[in-house]
Image (cartoon, rainbow, N blue to C red; front, side, top):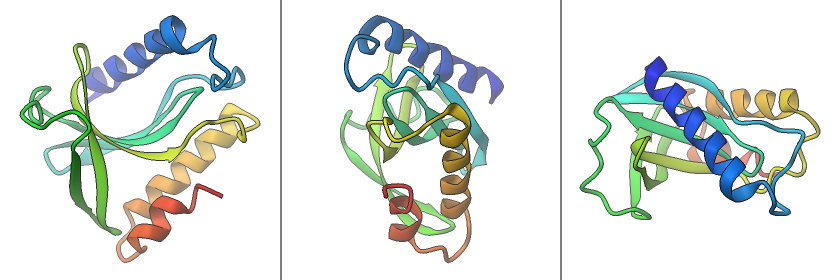
Length: 142
């Protein structure tokens, strides 16, 4: 898991530096960080914070596991809080992954610590039984 999450962080740092840094959505007080990645089903779940978005990420154990799914396709995953809709993403370095947006842009976050606390709380809600699917995912979008 550590290798997959490390690759995810490195790749999104690179994307930020090469493609997003000059855009108004890039919130300079924040940095790319993986929060609370843990084993889940056939892979790992956690939150990726970047200066431009915060997403719940599902990484499969096999880098090409979801390669047959079309990028942008919706995919429902059954989490302890209920069914959650994710979107398929793919990257040459990261491989296929599923993501669910928690926040974008990130301008309302005053600090990395503030974003990290919200990421941690959102993942806890998603992974808590009977938390309520819509409440768990939408609660970060105030």
